[in-house]
Length: 79
Image (cartoon, one colour):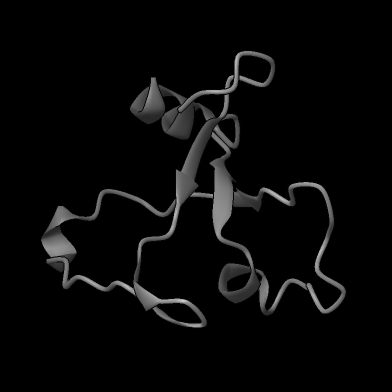
């Protein structure tokens, strides 16, 4: 889904399990199918987790914005 104001796409982690026992859903991806790394910006929602920092943001956040404006190559790949 794209935000009309920022024009950034929102992506979310997939999880399996129920209730408090939820784990990230993982897939094995062939290295040759990866074109480039992408810059993700955490979507904080209404409140920011008190322990959130640069080292644990991928673990604590569920949803992220894809920063397509990082460089022209990323912009061209996304749009």
